[in-house]
Length: 327
Ligand code: GLV
Image (cartoon, rainbow, N blue to C red; front, side):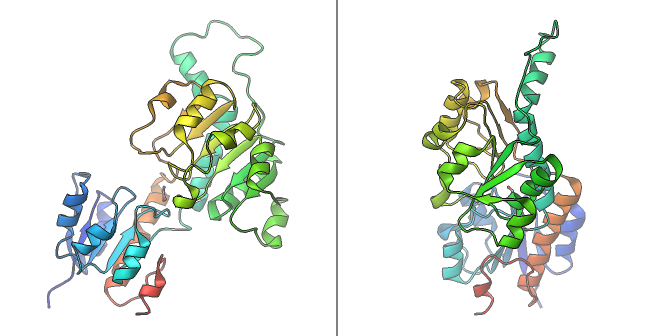
């Protein structure tokens, strides 16, 4: 019996990829080339499934070129790189990696927020440039995190984990906006208050954005929203590029309409808007919020579990479109 073939589209932990070799003929990409759309479609020829990351876009064109494809398993919780409607229409299962990265991503979101509030990167650059010649009372003064108002846009698993850190660890007041309000038993231990988006912008001392990217959340935080924020406020984005209007943010930072920002995700990454590179009051990291050994291994492992189950008649643990399985 011929074994199904799968593509592992990016370099990933060898021992985890080896688990796929037990079941499938594996074409991998150890040199970690980023495939163009045409290359990805060509690499998928004859494959029943694919292990992908957020860098690989699965759309109707790629799927139509590969009608044999049955499962695409993303090593990421966000899945805006997958056209789920196109997958549904063609009976292709899509999976993601929720839960395993929640706490790690929340740690990093909190770290970025603290870095922005306390001007960590800006002051470190100053020191490295050799500009530190004396102590002064107002050198890199920022704003407190403890006791401040933490505003969360997108109160899903990661948003709630950041809120826990703020409320329970730092005595922060938590306000949030989300598509739907949390159940009272989730709000109560955090003292979290549900507010409209405009009020969130007005009240937050530190705004953390954790909302998934979609057409509906495109530029959810743009110049109109930033205009409502306090001049002392910070903005942190660990969600997706495109949720924040990066050009508008750079302008707001340059003109000190808000105090500081921290970004792990960017519109059009790995390119970064050139204006962000020249404003001092922003911390920039290359999409690493989930990047710990344990968490990246757990994400890769979950994507592999999904792929194996999808193609061997098992139950994939974290399907995005489980209705496809019922067919
Ligand atoms: C990372 O950005 C993810 O969605 O897992």
